[in-house]
Amino acid sequence: TGTSTGTGTGTGIVIPSGPGITVALASDNPVAATIVADSTGTTDSAQSMIQGMKITLANGDSSDVKVTTIKFTREGISADADVSQAYLYEGDTKLVEYQSFSSALLTFNSSGGIVTVPAGSSKTITLKYDLANNTSSGKTIRFAIVAATDVVSDGSKVNGTFPVVGNYMSTAVTTDVG
Image (cartoon, rainbow, N blue to C red; front, side, top):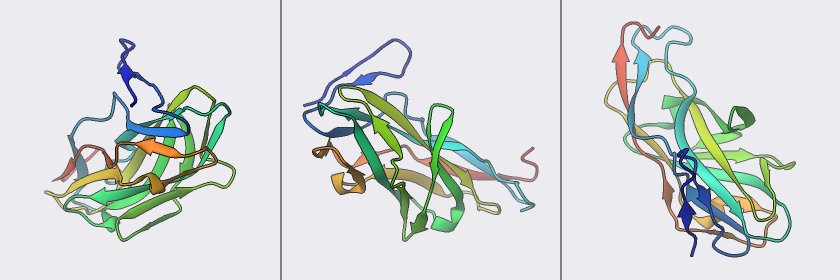
């Protein structure tokens, strides 16, 4: 089984649990928070670049592993329309924007690879999203990687304790976001 060791910086290191890619919630996964929309509904009136979830991908193979698909399931009392855009980041670098969001399934694909994890190493990926204009107050949104089949790579297999689940974000509304 995999273990985690702290570095004192809150980023942690995930040790692969065997051959293949191990998917785990990052030690610095965002805490539950309130996210805000503007009741005026004007352009860019909702909070953007919300850190919804951080995952660590650890490579236990003897060669680099390219991850080509990651699927997140939206959970909570919300609708797909409450999220206007979604992205995957490694640090400050945008890796990819979402390709589809339907029936609560947010899909990221890149045939060239969303991210390549070197052999015996790990990378932390952040799911960020923009709250849609006119999202009402009192909704809850969180994302999860429900099963190993939600991560596609050229590695020998996908490991993890599924589902891997982020924290709920609750919506609030104000008359002047910024």
